[in-house]
Image (cartoon, rainbow, N blue to C red; front, side, top):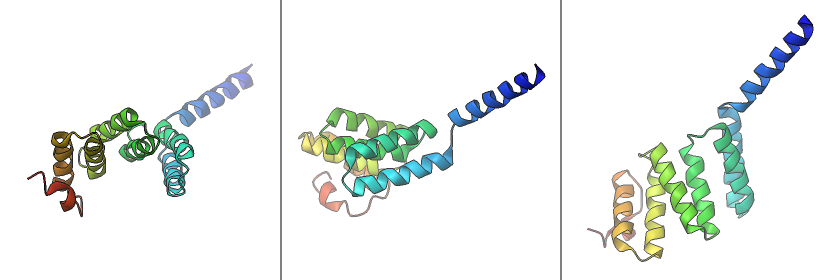
Amino acid sequence: MKRHFVFILILLSLWLVSCGPNPTKARFHLENAIELIFKAQTEEAIKELNLVLKYDRDSHEALYYRGSCKRQLNDIDGAIQDYQASIEKNPLYDEPYFALGLIYDYLQDSQKACSYYLKAEELGKQNIVDYTKWCK
């Protein structure tokens, strides 16, 4: 009986450890996702990014890249949600601000586009002058 109890405790502890944050697995899946994005395998990349978020729900990078994938698939609302979530996780990350600027440019909302472009520029985004010159 004691052996069964110890075995159950070991299984339970392994289960608890495997369900929690795991930076190594998160980084592995993020790198896979980025490679898939470069290969234009967008839907597969989203699956990898979902795994990143399973192992690190605070990954602003995974949210940004998933937003970019959704934008490629014309899921504009989903992209906006992911970009905004990325900003919530890391307000100093310039990429989602720029991406939101592109979306609002596409939606012909120049006021919102400019606000995001200018924020990206303020945070250090390089080569953005072509987007911000009409905003100032």
